[in-house]
Length: 106
Ligand code: AMP
Ligand code: ZN
Image (cartoon, rainbow, N blue to C red; front, side, top):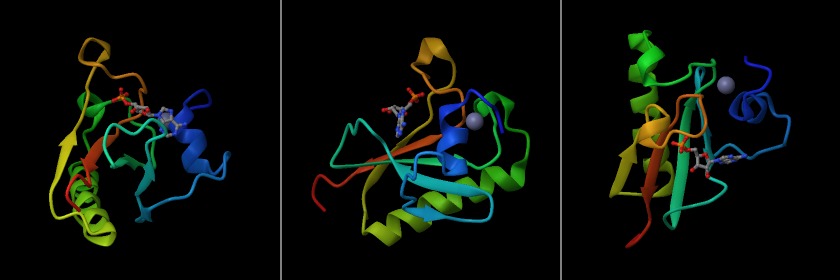
């Protein structure tokens, strides 16, 4: 938990954000500024700044399993995933997240 991390606050429940899906170590919520009809963010519950800081391979696996489970749950057969790593690559929130975009022809 990082005190000034917006995603840690969301994950802690500070804003009452609805979770689309949750596992022991991961959580999924909708992006506040969606770039597709469905735009979800898959995050580890633990604060990890970016993919570069992710060393836990079990957590890495759980994140991808969560992508599969949540897309199945919401009925997305086709979707794109994106991980922005570093400011120059467009990362704005420094809590690791996988963008999941879809729903064009749902
Ligand atoms: P990135 O540029 O990869 O760091 O992506 C950060 C994403 O977080 C952007 O798509 C934002 O729209 C999204 N975002 C920022 N604040 C919130 C929030 N409070 N709730 C949901 N999504 C957020
Ligand atoms: Zn965080």
